[in-house]
Image (cartoon, rainbow, N blue to C red; front, side):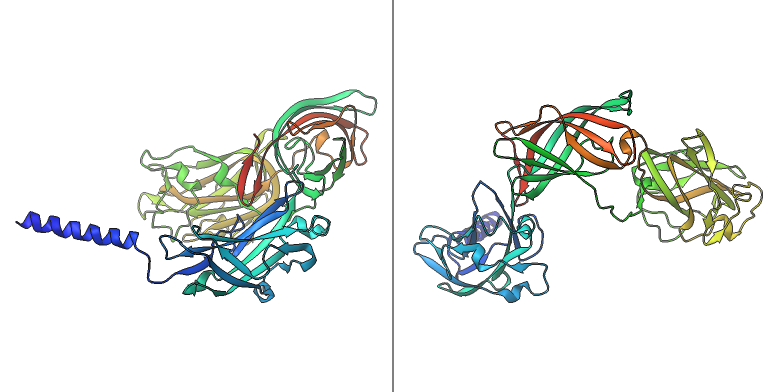
Length: 477
C-alpha cells in the first residue's frame, strides 16, 4: 500500500510539473536579448557589417510567458541618447542609417521574435574612419507594449556597430627570405610558416601584424587591393607598447640538484600565493630532505630567450627538517660566453649587494636580511636586465631547504640579427597578385633597413583562413 501511495504522489508531482511546462504563464512580457556579440559588456550588443556583403542588421525583442503566439504583438521604442552617458560610445548620426520602423517592433502571429532592421548608408557610414571600430551606437529603450510588461532588466539595449572589409581575417602565411649585403652577397636565408592577423584599415586596405613574424623586426604593413586585384604594400612602424613584466617562470621547465621523492619541484612555479612560510599551498612545495649544510639549486629553463630583471622567492619550512636558508644567490646562463654568470650588483630586499659579495658562499650568516632569506614574504631581488634562457637559484641551510614559490619577472627578449634591424621601407618586387576565388595573396617584396646597407627579399603566400564577426568564427569554405 505504501508503494502505491508513493507512486501516486510521484505521478501527481510529474503531472504538476508537466502542467507548468505546457500552460501559459499568467502574464506575458517582452525584452531585449542579453547577447553581447563578443564584446562582453552587459546591455551592449556588438554587431559587424561587411563592406560589399550588405549593410543591414536586425535589432530584436522576444516574447515570454506564452506557449503559443496566436496574434500579432508589439512594443514601442525610442532612441535614448542618455544611455550612452559614461560609456565610450557616440550616438550614430541620423544621416548614417534608416530604420524599417521608426518607433515600433512587431512580433508576428506564430512567432516569438520581433525585429526592426537597421540599414546603414554605404557612403556616409563607410567613409567615416570611426566606423572601423565600435565607436558609434544606437541606444534603444522599450517604452510601451501590447503585453503585460516590459522586462525591467532587459528593457534597453545599446547596439554598437562597425564595418570590416572582406579581406579582414586570419591568414596562413608561408614563404622564404634571403638577406643580401650591399654587394648582393648572401648573408642569411630561411623559411617561415606562421599565422597573420589582418584588420580593416580602409575600404580596401588591411593592416597586417608583421609578415615574417618571429624572424623580422616587429612591425606592421598596410596591404591594399584595387579593383583589378593589384596590390599595394607599405611599411607601418609599430607604436611600442609599455613593457609589462610577467612571471616567465610559469612558462619554464623546473629542475633541481635534489628533491625529496614525496615533494615536487614543479610546485615552485605553479602560480600559488603562499600565506606564510609554514603552511603548504594546495599545490604543495619543494623540499630536499635530507640535505643539511649543503648547497642545492633549482633551475628554470625557458622555451625562448627572455629579458629578466626581477626574482621573488618565498621560502617554505616545516620547522624541523626543512629550514629557511641562511644564504642564497642566483646565476643566469650567459648565451655569449656559454657559462653560468652571477648577477652584477643586485638589490636584495632593498639592500644593494656589491658584486664582490654576491654569491660569496661563506659571507652571510643565518638571519642576515641582505641574503634574501626572510620568512613569510617574497624575497625580492632586482638586477640590471639580462637576456637568457635559463636561471639558477642556489641556497643553503643548517638543515634541508624548501621553497613555496619562485617568480622570475621579465619580458620576451628582442632577437638580434640582420632581419631584426629597424625597417626603413618595404617595396613590392616581381609578380604580386590577389586571387579572389581562393582569397590568396602572392607577395614578393624587398625590405630595406634604416641606416643599413643590407636588405632582405621575401616571397610568401597568404591564404585567408577565417574572420571573427559578431564574436563568432566564420571559416573559409
